Length: 350
Image (cartoon, rainbow, N blue to C red; front, side, top):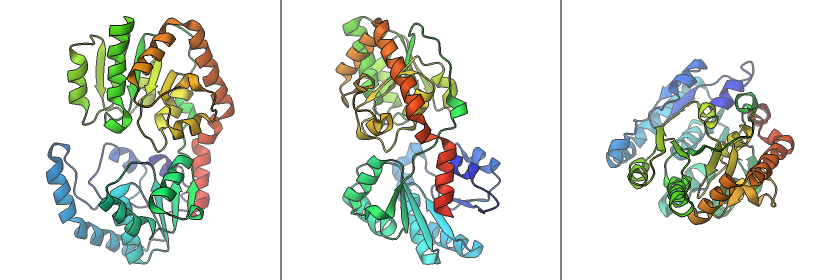
């Protein structure tokens, strides 16, 4: 969303931003854009999850009323929402405020409880006038989960600033293997941790291991690797992903599920050697069913460890991976150009 707003034609669009769950680490970057920001909902305390959820639900009517008031006061023509909480309150508020264009951006394929699925359908999917899916896999998910008409959904891939991630890497020894992303179950950091342990115990290989990111699984992951891996480092949350990708020779993307997988594209553009879970959207991004060298079965840490060992000890396999990445950059990367994304949004919003 930050990338989209930073590239909109300001002669065509006046923008105001509203959050429904406090703020976040990118608030400063959003404020640099110069758009008014309205923090309408309570913040979420990770240390008091249950309390935060209950408080948010109790204050939901007030947040909704604030959103309706803002939309009426500034006479909004179009509302764009993402993700779940913003979809519920943003689309409903827009409908109640009489906003004609109500666009929802769906970014994930997460399984929802029956109650959450019901609320999303009737307060967001049905009331929206258009839905943007960030991949064909997400579009299929929307159709299958909420029976939304396919004609209502448009696929617009997330965009990458190519100049930030293009890299010139000289082939060399692989010394660091890492993951970049939230340390949550859906992202599969535990799969990576177990594979790293297997790599050491079964294949007697122990490269430097980087966990770049933070999340609810960090404590359990640190406990898991503490006594078994002497060269594992937990970096925590970072804003400069490019800097950390430059430190990683072999990037692992072990997600159990993804709506898109931005880090996969960023890693490919950074020319990291890479292996990733064999999930539908990653095949969509790679766009070649024969590139099995890049993919491993979802959740199978033993096969992942075996694949990592083969790559570490086999320069020829490394060269095959490099060749596939170079070919992807040449033939496929244009689909994820940030300027293309911005133009697609401008055409849709206009």
